[in-house]
Amino acid sequence: MSNVSFVPAEYVVEMWPKVRGYIRSATERTNGRYEPEDVLYEILDGKLLLWAAIDGADVMGVATTRFMEYPRKKTLMVPFLAGEDFKEWGEDMLSVLKKWAAENECDTLEASGRPGWAKVFGNEGYKRLWDWCEVPVNPATDGE
Image (tube, rainbow, N blue to C red; front, top):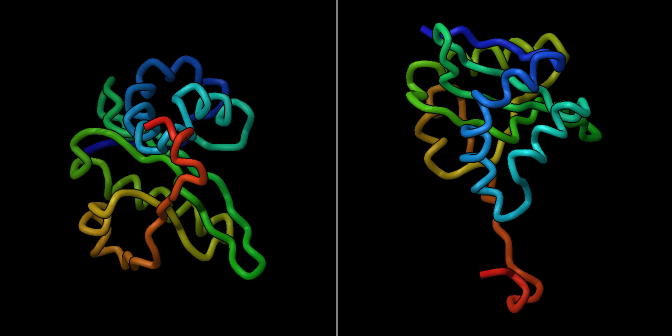
């Protein structure tokens, strides 16, 4: 069983070598929007919070969160979630994040991600609202 906890800002740099690989695997799916160090800077700047699933001395997975306030709803957004053996820590991570969201008067948790997450969170009331897609404005400069 993993221990999921918030990583205070003063420990982020010390923890970074253990979590960078997971953050990298998540940023690889942003289509050039983020590199791992961009996430680090946003954590250090207080724009994102870092959460880690820890088993003994090993980090099994990570999540980042930020509050998003819409005109009629407050949500805890999870922009990055990655790790290994998700079945071992995912439920604990979700439980901790839901509690944090409730303590901070959020109405929902939200994230975007690959379609496979629907299987993971199906029992948690996951609702597919939309898919996020992108179309290049100028395909010649899209980098592909």
